Length: 92
Image (cartoon, rainbow, N blue to C red; front, side, top):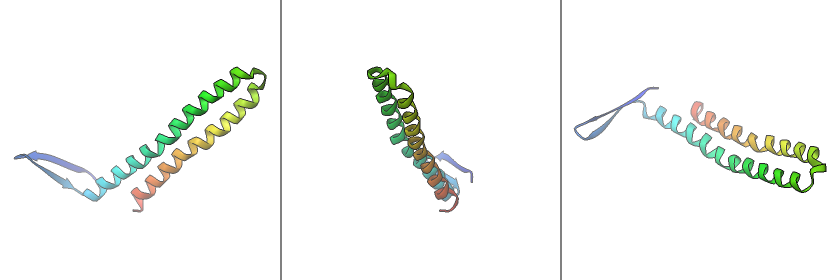
């Protein structure tokens, strides 16, 4: 699985299996791009939770329970992206 590259005479020479390198790159890109949306979603969710608790502090427990439900569902998307990256890596 090792891919080594050397720079000789101004030319890049790649030794190893390029297909394995592409699979590793696909795994990293799938996980990285899959984490962008949930990362923004979690930040938005936390901000709106702080706003809601500031407006109605008496509903803090109910708001926090809904926030944690939303957090779990949002973070599940990252695991789906990681799973699809593993599928592309091991099966593809």
